Amino acid sequence: MNLLTDVTEPFPQLRGVHHTAFPTWKPKSTVEFYRDGLGLRVPHAITAKGWGRAADEHPDFLHFFFEAGENSLIAFFYYVGTKPNPAFTAFRGQYLGLARHTAWMAKNVDELKRWRTVIKRTGAKVTPVVHHETLSSIYFQDPNGYDLEIACQERQLEEIDVVDANLTIDAMIDTFGDDNPNGQTIQDMWKKKAELVRKYMETAK
Amino acid sequence: MPSIYFPNVPEYQPLIKAISGQADVQCREAGGYVALTSPKEICVRRVDTGLIEAVWFGALVGGFEGRVAKFDDKELRIA
Image 1 (tube, rainbow over the protein chains, first blue to last red):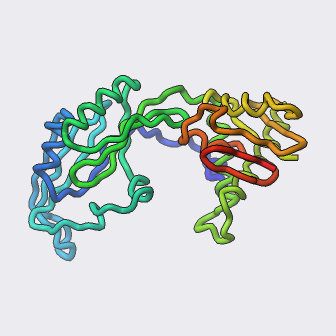
Image 2: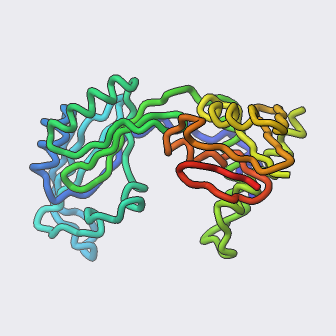
């Protein structure tokens, strides 16, 4: 199924990230880290009596924001009187934990290195600069245990990157579907990918 | 015959060069891809590519035909 074929009108356009939001039970440490440690300005903060439906027993709360560049924000909720919920903040395992993260953009590797120094100064652990296929990154955690990344694009993505990404997506869906019912391996997917690439190369001649 | 495909982008050039420079390896280019085929096993050592692990372990991104005889942090062999 390709939803694009069913669309007759152009999609509306997203304009980047406005904010991502997370619960915190460490408002002091959170402010010390983001505002004082990383130097992110606080442009907006909401304080409110819990006004959700009575059945939700919505606590009173604060909702505060830090500027993360290019008009994007990272935001936190502090629910007064609630106990920390480890489902949000507990260590979730090395790779699964890292899978859910916020990645900010830096201008270049020099800026990444400067950020690395700044992050170290806060006392947080930060990885060395990791060079991936098309970008470089550093990884660290905030005082709540949330995973953060700062990355910079090492080269602009080209038409072949788009073609290849979509062939990978086709191979992935064909191989694994949802929940991988046939127990396929990544090697099965790479074989499927080769089949798609071979066909693509024939039509591109 | 074992084959390996790569998008023809900068980060995979060390792999493409290391494999295409080997005897009997045939190289085809089309549509922004490179296909490398050999009548015998395709073998490439990471040390010959200079690639860091983050890129090395993505070496099969373009797909392969044959059988993965070995793929660890030192060597990739497609039989």
